[in-house]
Length: 75
Image (cartoon, rainbow, N blue to C red; front, top):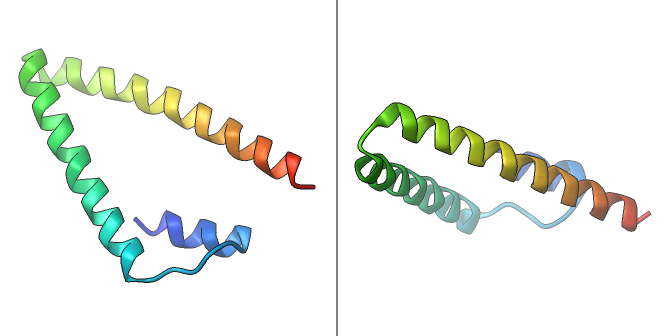
């Protein structure tokens, strides 16, 4: 939740305000809802945990790659 504020400070972009808190909270609640629905559909929380761990790893690599590209491109 606080990662957004730190990244804004480190990268010197934007400002933190109440909309950041609201959208981060809504995103967290949406993520919990999606996880709960997926776990019910899959029928096994261990398989759901593995699936979301793999997806989180893939998304993390993509986001870090895009962030690196943006930082390199804006030199």
